Length: 191
Image 1: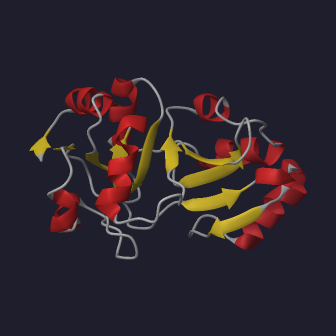
Image 2 (image 1 turned 135 degrees about the vertical axis):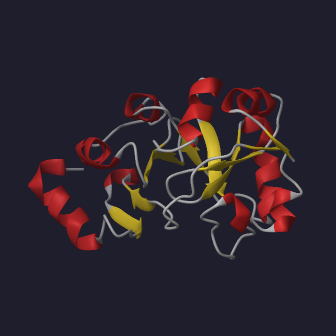
């Protein structure tokens, strides 16, 4: 593992590298499609368990979805960039998790020029690291590059599933509870 600038990390990611990058929530494992399999290996994560894509803007995120319900746009306006992952229908079937983050990871996204896969930098089932010095040594030894940055808040992003015309809060957060989501849907966010 070597320290890298966002530009160096983006170049390494293009070659299949996996990077450790702080977000506003937790430290993430970040990779392109070429490094996605390695993320599963590093996390000891069940294959097929989805990994979200980080995007530079709502427009970029929504361009990856089959359809964008009005509530998705409402939530994006309120919480992006920030700690919210939206699960939407994917063109051709299935679903896709999308997030527009804040923090140092945005510099990597800008340097890369497109969406990147990201998940918390921990062994599956273990505590999410808020700062780089909290990342498990077993994870650190398997990543290729690390981008320095400020610690996150420590709470993973809220996750809202709007696929299939539904509205489900898969993971609540301080800023987004079941009650708040229901109120937003009633106030015209629609489905």
